[in-house]
Image (cartoon, rainbow, N blue to C red; front, side, top):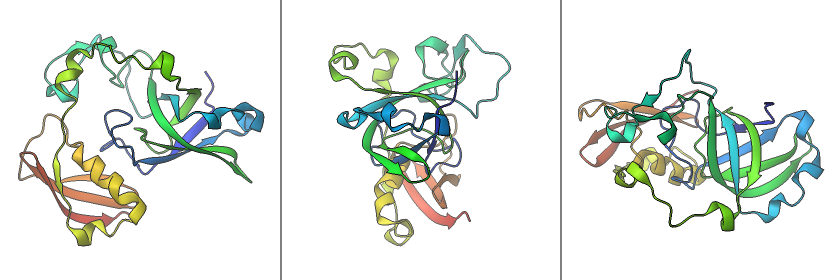
Length: 224
């Protein structure tokens, strides 16, 4: 398959990225296409859809072999499930699938058509294989069984983010920062209330601690 585009986001690495798309709707991203795919005709009609599917590559996954079972983080990192019953990046083929909101289709003088999206779960620079419209009457299945994810989908922390630290971020990114932290970016197997964790978002590293269901931000440090 050919890579048709890359996405630009505020996540320089994997740590802290929401575990699924749509969990933090305020997260923004920009999809920039390779020169071969910048023909405006290829985007005709796309602006009429509110959401799109992204097929992309787990480009940072390093593996030589695949395993038939994996340990989903939201099950505590101890219980194994079949790889095809999870959305783990450690798969036979490194393909990800995300549904994101299409905010706009813009035309840039140098880059041609670009897509502004929100609610993504992709790292900065992630290669994209394809873009498809989300079609509600076929893609939405309210009656679908949710398996073990029904027990793990509600998992949010209360975020204590001191005002003077939050204001280091521009206004348009503050809701996204709080949303990321509320999703609990810690490794599933680490639960030390004394440990200070760090997550990179945009131009800053956020230092925080978690005690029970409360996350407290300790510092916001500029990365560059």
